[in-house]
Image 1 (cartoon, rainbow, N blue to C red):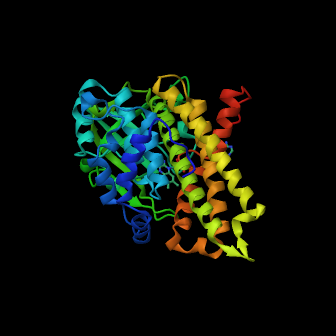
Image 2: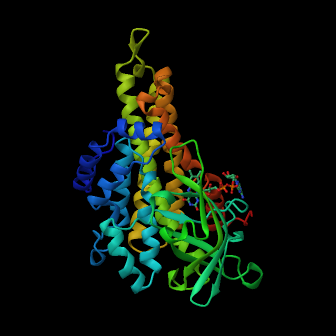
Image 3: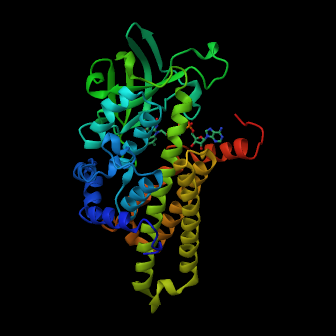
Length: 386
Ligand SMILES: Cc1cc2nc3c(=O)[nH]c(=O)nc-3n(C[C@H](O)[C@H](O)[C@H](O)COP(=O)(O)OP(=O)(O)OC[C@H]3O[C@@H](n4cnc5c(N)ncnc54)[C@H](O)[C@@H]3O)c2cc1C
């Protein structure tokens, strides 16, 4: 176990106990069937882990992002994949930070109990991609309703969620001072929406990740489902994205440790040319380098968590943690695959599955280049590049 004991050991032990009931074989089977890990997500919900960030007054456990990130890390370190459920953690934060009292009282206790799932967030669009402020989905106020028209792509877990947070433009771009203004976020009740103005088209993809194209054709939602103030939705989404990036950094760190555990054990026992392959420096060094990178990413992850939990700005740290952790887990995944030789490609070793799963985080939820552009502009003060 390469990560040293810390003050979250009790939490780690409890999550590990639950994960032990869902070993890598379970996730392998789900992956082969292109299914959804229903039993795992149910168990996680029942144990209260997905309500970690919900305050106790709303039925959750009132933990911080740091603890939430430890939960996600442990799932991935156990050989599982948090991608099936991590949305609940950070989407709920948007509701908690920007929702009205009435919205919080209506939804949070039911999310905490598992009666409602808030697993989805609809931001990305096919024509605009990373250039979010040019999105084309619109929400027009008509009396006590908003009417939604447009299209989204890559929206995850819609088929396993009851609610979705949706970003749409409420004021045309030409009528706002800054392009980040005039967008709003809404809570969409998927049970009412699907088939009544909203259509879902699943996207088969490289990872076993339930993700979809969404089409909105005069979908009507109650005006009271607007979260926060109209026009300020982009800022609210960015707030939530810091939590998302930090949690995903923790998942990559869990992946990184999993790959390193696995390859270290194999390199000690696999004998070729009369000695363990791990005795060769050509094998040792890439593994040691990946481990150093995971450890370094871990420090940035805890820094981002601490700032978020203290309600301090953490955009730079959350982005840097995500980039460092995604790079480190990718490096660890490459070393693990490489030093298993041909066996790394066999599904029964779980390496090729974890390799695909961790590769996603070079692109989603934000691509590595966009993080570099963010740091260049917002941290280093270089001229805006786009
Ligand atoms: C499995 C999966 C699940 C997802 N789930 C969700 C979800 O639940 N909700 C949601 O809203 N979105 C989701 N996404 C979308 C994801 O956030 C986007 O794919 C990601 O932000 C990249 O956007 P894009 O695909 O439009 O790429 P584009 O913006 O088209 O960019 C393509 C590539 O070009 C490069 N690039 C673009 N612009 C620049 C630039 N200015 N400088 C340098 N390089 C640049 C980047 O390397 C980028 O990878 C998901 C995606 C995947 C694959």
